[in-house]
Each structure stands twice: as structure tokens, then as C-alpha cells.
Image (cartoon, rainbow, N blue to C red):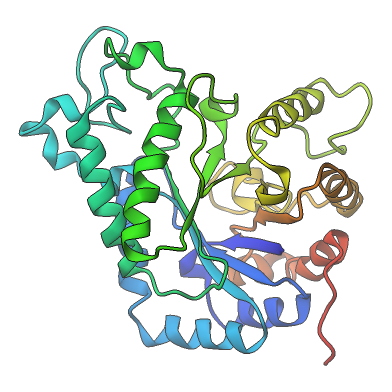
Amino acid sequence: MNGILIHPHEVGEYWCSLLERSGLDCVALHPVGGKLAHQSLQELLDYVKTPEFKAFASRMHAHGIQVEYEFHALSWLLPREEFSRHPHWFRMDESGVRQCDFNCCASSQGALQMLEERAALLCSLLPRTSVRNRYFFWVDDIPNTSCHCPECSRLSPSDQALILYHHILRGIRRSNPEGQLAYLAYENTVQPPKTVTPEPGIFLEFAPFHRSWEVPLTQEGCIENAGAVRQLQALLEIFPAQQAQVLEYWMDNSMFSNWQRPYGRLSFHPEVIRRDAAFYHWLGINAITSFGCYLGEEYARDYGPAPVDEYAAALGAVPPAL
């Protein structure tokens, strides 16, 4: 699978034409994360009800392109408004105070039950526009927001996240018995879980946020990339490579623009993509995608069409016969 993630609000004729000729076989809609992730997720849920989305999904289907959804879901799955009634559902900070800002307590049965119920609802609200049955309901992406209560303090951030993902998956399977869920290895969860074992249906999604994109992962002498390679190899001792998926940042102009406007020109290195993709394939990973945000029509007006064709070619995607 060769794919790309884009913001829902950038969907339109421009992206449709880019995708149709690229040879990519998957596009994922990625609402903005951060502190307002629950709001942007709700906006996505409203968007998928519209005729515009249905036309987009139909057009992608006609060209053999799966449409998926990837987002930080925890604050939607466990609404922050529950804090006044159930403060023990939420994380305890290092000073011993319960906080309702991000994520939750991985040892609270009430919180875990709520995650299951809301995950079942969320799954039912998203149109099934992909045959892969893969879901990407990630924990919140704010660093250092795991729980430090007496029970959770014995668990690493990765162990806590995997517990949450297990319960989210159980909820998903109430709606789709064939569903699978990504364990997002990113920031505080990029280290392998230590005491919790992935249950069937959990697959690895590796997002190497702290690396250099100027040189390939295997570039000799690059300390950042060597660290990312070690992290991935450690994760693959726990998660099967043949089920794993890579989420890269090669095309993420939002990150290269520091998530601010005006957008800069994409820092694009097709040879790095080609060599990285070859390395991932060598490890046995055959599902590869990248963020491709801030590459919509506004970008095209300033810099010309985004190099989606070149990105797809570097991954080895075969463009359709026109």
C-alpha cells in the first residue's frame, strides 16, 4: 500500500486529479491534532455526511484508491466534560493532581469502558470507504501526558497507550468485527511496550518524528536517523513487520512550515524517499504512507502543483494508464 494523508478541508478537484494520476492506492483524511483535536474530529464527522465527501469517496473508489481516516481521537472518545463527575477517569500528573487536559487513566475501568462505547460509536459514524478494515484512532499527541497514578506509574507510556488501544479495538469490533487498530509509535510511545503484549488486531504504525529528512534513514553518521532505525527494529521484535505500516513526514509541508501560514515550499527529497522505502521493504514493511498536509490549492498557487507524482514514483507506485 502506498498512500498519503491530507486535511479534509483541502479535499477537492485539485487533490482528486493529483491522486487519480499518481498510482497511489490510499488516501487518508487527517483532521488537525493538538489541543483542539476533538473539535476537528467532530468537523470530520460532519464532513463525511456531505454530498461533497460522498462524491470524493466515489471518485476515489472508481480509481481503486482506498479512503481511510487517521486522527488523534482520545479526547473525543473520552469527553473532557466527564471530569466533573468522574475525575478518577483522567490522568494524574507527576504532582498527584488529576488533569482533564489530555489522554486518561489507563487503570480506570470506567474510562476504559467509556473508550469502548465511544469507539463503537465513532466506528459506526465513519463510512466504510476502505476494504482494509484498518482504523487509526490515536491517543492525544501532546508529549508527557501519560498517567502517574499509583497503578499507572508502574506502566511505561507505551504500555499505557497499548492498554487504551486494546479497549478502543474492542469497541471498534462491536461495529466492525473485522476491524484492526494501529498502535501509533510516535513521541512518548515510540519505545516498545515493556509489560503489555499486543492483542490480535493491533498493528504497528511507525511515525519517526525525530529524524532528519535531508538524508536517508540508513545514512552513515546521522545520529538522529540511527536512533530511529534502532527504535523501529526494537518495535519489530514485538509487532510483526508484515502487518506494520509506516507513517512518514516526507511530504508534510505543515511540519516543514512549522504548522503556520504562510506556507513555505516543500523540502522535497525524492532520493531519500526512494532509499527509505527500499529500507522499509527490506525490513518486511509493505504499507507506506506520509503526511501530505498544506499541499492543497493554496500551495499550488504559490509554488505550483505538489510533487505527488514524484513522491508516488519514489515509493514505486505505478501510475494508471490514461
